[in-house]
Length: 609
Image (cartoon, rainbow, N blue to C red):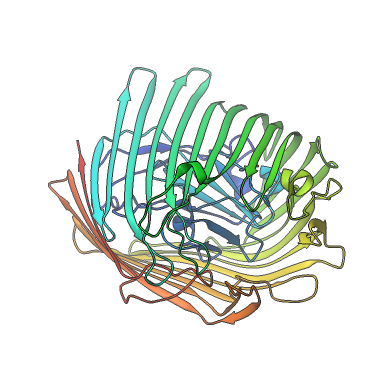
C-alpha cells in the first residue's frame, strides 16, 4: 500500500479560493513500508499559515499542546523546544525526512527561533521516542519540515508593529516531465527589548528555496535547495546589551528518487553562525577591532537507501542510513571555549506492517554504529484495533537515544571544563495507549486522539563538577495524557489541544520549564465564500523555572494569551489579512527574565498571478 499524495489549496481554505492544488509527498516512503505504519505512531500534520506574521518553526509547532517552545524574547531569539516534557535537546528536527542537527551546539539543542518556515508546505510532529524511524536524538519526538514544488504564483507584502516589513515571492515553472518552483522571503523588524527601557532588539530574515519534481517511467526524482540567513540582535537574561548580535546562516541541499519499491536520498546541510559582542560606548560608538567574535560551524553529509517488499497483507522495508558530520567552534574573550571534531554514524534498519481484518500490527528495529561511542539498538512495536468504523484503539512501545555531542565529549574552556570521552548515550522508551475517533456525516466531522504515555530516560547526561556525566542514580520518568481534537460543522472548525505532564528527574523532582497543564483552542469561521475570521488561545500552566540572576529554582504561575485575525479574498486573486497577537496585551516572561511581546498588529496583502 502506497502513501497517497495529499492535495490541498494554498489560499485560506477550499471554500475561500480556487488556487491550483499542490502535491505533497510525506517522506516516510523511505522509512516505513506503508501508511499503516503511521496508524499506531503519534503523529500530527500542521499546515503553516502563510500569513502576515513571519512564523519560525518554533512558533508553528507551539500551536500543538504537546510541544512547548520557549523563546528568549521576541522573534529571532533562541528558542528551545520541549516535546511531551522531555529535555530541550530531545527533539530531532528534519527537512524532508533528513536530520538537520547542528553539531556545533554544546548540548545538541536545535534553535527553533531563527528558521522562518515560509518555504514549508507542511510540518509533521512525531511524539514519543522515534529513533527506530529517524535515528539519534529523537528521544522526546521529531519534527519534520516538508517542502515541495508548488504550482501557484504569488507575491506578498506585509507590515506590522515595531516597524515590521516583509516581502515574499513564489514562482513556478513547468515542462513535459517536471515542476519547478522558487520561493523567496525577506522580513525585518526593529523588535523590542526584553528588559524595561532597554534598546530594541530587531531581526532581519532572508530565505530562498528551490524545489523540483520530475516524473519518469521508473519513478519520481526530487530536489530541494534551501538558503536562510537570520540576523538578530540579542540581550542577556534581565540584562540590556546594546552591541550583541548573531548572524546564523543555513544551507541545505537534497536529491531524492523514489518509486513503489526503492528509495534513495542524499543531502548536505551546513550551519554557519557568528556571534559578535562589540565594544560600544554610551554615545553608541562601536569598535569592531575590540569585539568578541564567536564562530560556530557544523557540516553533515547524509544518505539513505531503502527497499520495500509487499506480499498480501505483509509489507517490509530494509535500508541503511549514513551520516558524516563535523563541528568546529571557538568562543573568545573572557570566556574561552572550543571544539574541533568529526564523526561518522552508520545504521541499518528494518520496518514492517501487517494488517488483517480489523487489526494492524507494525514495528521495526534499527542498529546505529558511531565512530565515537558504542553501538545502539532501538526498536518499536505498535498495534491498532478497529472497534467500530469510527473508533480505533492503539497501543505501542517505541525506543530512542540521544548521542553525546562533540562538545560534551571533547570540548574545553578556560574555566576548567573538559569533555568526557567516556559518556554513554541517553536511552529512552515510550509506552502509549489510546483511542482515535473519526466521524464523518453529511453535516459535520469529528476526529480526535486521546493518549496516555510514559517515557523513561536512562543515563541522562548532566553537567556537574566542570564536566558532563551520565546520571546513574535512577531514571527520568515522564508521564502524561495527550488529547487533540477537531470538529467541523458547516463553515466553522473548532480545534482543541490539551496535555498534562509530570516530568520527574531521577530524584523525583519536577523539572523546570515543564508546566503540568498546557492547552490550545482554535476557532475558524467562514463568514462567506471570501471572508474568514479566526481566534486562537494558548495556555501555559503553573511551572518551575530558573531565576535569571541567582539561578535558583522558583515556582511560577500560569500564563495565557489570545490572537485573532481576519482574511478576505478580493476577486479571487487578492488576499488581505489582518492579525492581532496578544489582544489583551498580557505582560509575561517566558522563560523567567525574558519579557514576551505585548499586543502586536500586522497586515499582509498577497496577489496571486
